[in-house]
Every structure is written in structure tokens, then in C-alpha cells.
Image (cartoon, rainbow, N blue to C red; front, side, top):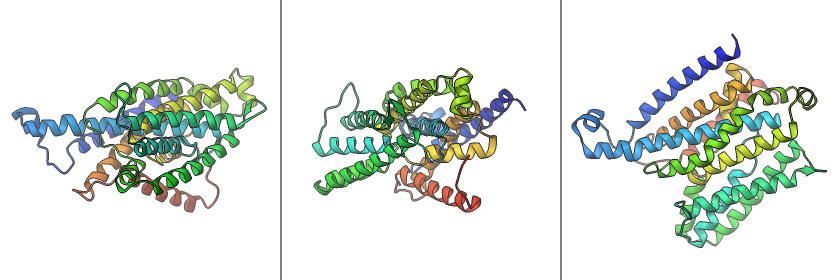
Length: 333
């Protein structure tokens, strides 16, 4: 089967899966929504629940899951390391620290319609990108292993600062911080969705446009260079495109871990390592995965809603434990 046919079949099946998951998610929840009443008889409460709460939440889960998954797939291809993701590169840690600072300062004033928490989270994510990137340079060249290590160290540093600030915070601030750090898709209306799209769309489009170069890069730096790939520029493009898209999502949803780690692994086990197929499929499968886990998080212990980050972390931990036990050796792809 050629790559185009394989891509078409894979995208079709994954899109149908997303439609199924999204449909279930829209009509699942504490309030029993009757689609006939909502769409035909004009029941205002059902309309409000579907149009203002359920549909925006499904769209946000789709966008967040897709962006985190495609970012993880691109970063794993760049570093040739199965543990690379926006979370491990310090972007999530930077966003968490920025959000905590905004909460601790009690900032209520936003910027251009964005909340102060989202603004600070995004700015600290961008700062982390440049900090980790500059630290990882050796004689003007970015060492990918050093970049990954710098991201992990940044996460430890941010965790220490977060705990230090929380120690001096009151109960309300600590609770608000903990809820944000756990990750949530609790949005009302499409306002947050549009703001996230501003950063997510450019980043995803850039990544999808260089999948051919990424395939050549997988053969080795020297081979890729001999075939006309500007390796240095490609590395920078992937790093900043994934960071821009992931920062835009995390600044709104909070850090949601393991999506960017699980999804690329599953796809590589099923359909191979062709990045022309892996990246677009990662977006759709990531969208379905996060939508499904969000539905589970708000229904499994109804009426109590569990932060979706807890669910994804639980599933991710179990998945990697199974993978390690299955292979009995270092996980590579």
C-alpha cells in the first residue's frame, strides 16, 4: 500500500472515530440532554448546555489533544527519543509557574481579552523555550540530547519554585493553583477556543509542511544534508513551531501530560514511522483520546468532576509500564 492511500485510509478511520467520540461526549454529562428537545422542540436549557458548554468543551478537547499529540510526534522525531514532548522540554513547567505567579499576585486585569493567568502562562512558556534553547547550544550548534536534558532540569527548577510560592500562599490561592496545574478543559463558550487557535493553527501547519524533511532527517544528519535538507533550520522550525502551538494550548487548559507521549507511540506500533502519516494521524487520534478522557473525567464520579490531567497521567503511566514489561528492554522506535 502506497503512502497516500495509507494516509487517506488512516485519516478516514480516525476521523470517524473522532465523530463517534465527540457525539458521545456532547450528550454525556450530569445534565441529561435530550437532542430532540434541544434541536426540535426548542428547550432552552438543553440548547444552552449543548451550545454553550458541551460543544465548546469538545472543540477545546479536540484542539488541545490534537496539538499536544502532533507536537509530541514532531519532537520525538527531532530528538529520536520516545520521551520527548512539550511536557519534558519544560514548556508545561514554565506555564505552571507563570500561572501561579499571576494567581499569587491576584491579577485580575487581562490583555487583549486574555486572562492574566493565560498571559503569564504563555509568556513564561515562551521564556522557557528561549532559555532551554540557549542553554543547549554548544559552539553555536544545538545538541539535541543537551536540549532534552535542559528541559528536564527546567521542569525540576520550576517545580521547586512552585512549591516555594505555594508554601506562602493562602488556602484559596493554593486551591486555585492546584486545580490549574492538574489541567482542565472547563470552558464556557467559544472565546477560549478562538484565542487558542491563533497559536495552534500556525504551529500545526508548519509542522505538517516539513514532514518530508523529517523523514529524511530520520535517516541521519549526514544523509539528510546530502539530500538537500537544511538540518539546522529544520531543527529550529520544529522546536519553535511545537513550542508556539503547545504554549497556546497549555496557557488555556493548564498542563495536560502524556498525550504527546502516548499517541505517537500507539500510531508507530500500528502504521509505522512515516512522519507524513504519523503527524496528521497524531492530531486526530490525540483529539479523540483527550475528548474521551475528558468525558470520562466528568462522568465516572458524577457529579464530581476529576481534572482531566489526572486521568491522562494515570492512563499514560499504565501504558508505559505495560510497554516496558512487554518489550523487556529500552523503549525505542
